[in-house]
Length: 621
Image (tube, rainbow, N blue to C red; front, side, top):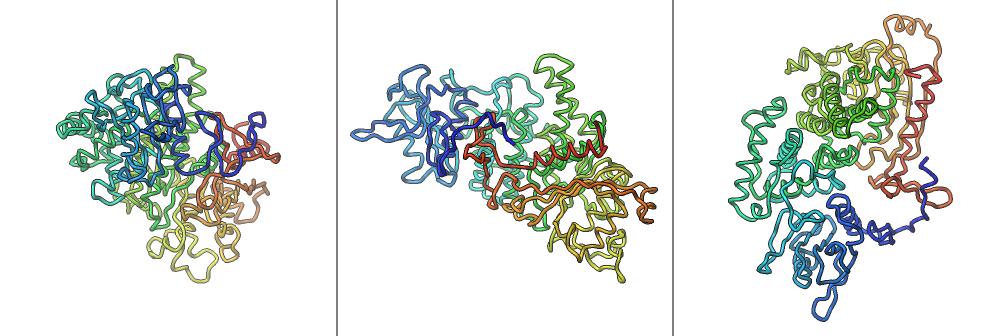
């Protein structure tokens, strides 16, 4: 339960609290955009709240118009003649050329107030600067507090992103709309630039190469210089660093105008230092726009990944956390592997902080150790090459391990895989943990007799061998095969496998091959917005040893307890909208950022499991 000492009176339905003034405002799409930019002005650009006004009235002839956000010269009175910056925030579907709400509205406010900078945010983000001759021209970004103009970023000036999700969405939409390519290809081109951005942060401590100045953005010669002298050489280094992701002859296919937009959008952020939850949510949304689920593939929400990974890791002594070999045999977008990295990072950070040193030194040691652990111990496989590259990039952004993600069908025998490294690194019976969310449903049916012949389930409890089986059923067996005896599997499955009378043969087989540790029935809303499993569960099992299998087949295994939980809430409704926690008295609980607390019981499940497994004698005490 959230901290009951941090409560505020219930915010009425249809209202939200303004980040600048603390007052209640209408809960509308455009208001959410304005509040995100209000937070960005303070947290990213470092402007003082006292220098920002909301819906400031600008005199235009005989009338007055309300500007969404106005930043005044620091410390000055809130007067029209000392406005430094105006922000107009629109719904995410409003076009810049819209007659009533487009960029011309912002330009008219700038002309009336003689302010230096303007920022229009809707479907795109467009920044304007007033030149000395009074003309208003596009530029790359607004200045940080204390600067008169935006400066080329240096490593020390990069800021963690507050709303990376919206920035990546704008970039993706801009590529799609202005490059004339399909969404999936737009996603791949955007991936290339994100790799360039991350590599620049990895390798640079001073002046960065991933940037564009305002004058360069306005001229073809400047745009060409940015591509030829900065971004293209960066991408050459990316290809050298990640030859298993990019072909040596790959290039950036974006035209210079589109490339310039994306560089200007991302240049001020530190993707490496952005909060992992923000980064994960942003990447999740970006991938979701391109993941059709044609083979029953749907990404797993981060809170499900965190719960399943946390529960499974806790089954091992803490000192083993950094040496466990972990596999996701149908890794999708890499959510489970990223969750492993994040939780291992927490363990490593606690250790390194005890060793002492400056924050920068500690961060450096943590990053190096996490990278080493990930490269030695984390592995992924997926049949979809698009998802393989997606997972690889996700891991690069979160600490690495990307070299151990391979394209292949993990239901088939390793000898059928094309990748020699995959055959060498991903061997049955070699992993401590397998955590996965297999494809499911009618789109993922396995009917190849050669594949089915590898498994016990098609013939188990049947007079005649089954000629086809849904993939998620076979993945129960194949995932267990990848484990060492005594290793643990955490798998997302439809409830039907656990309670459908017609699937009793799967349960009977599983009881002969594994010990059931935990079963968590997830709320129906867990995958509702993505079209995934309608009645999902997370099942955790331990692979039996040969001796235990013989005892199980003789019905001589000792009885044991199974942890079971049915959480009510998962933090979202059936449309994917967040659901917030309220106390029985009607009070809203705020988090450390003074934001409403999402009503999500999955972390409580992990806590309850930790208490249960201590009593049951699993893992560290």
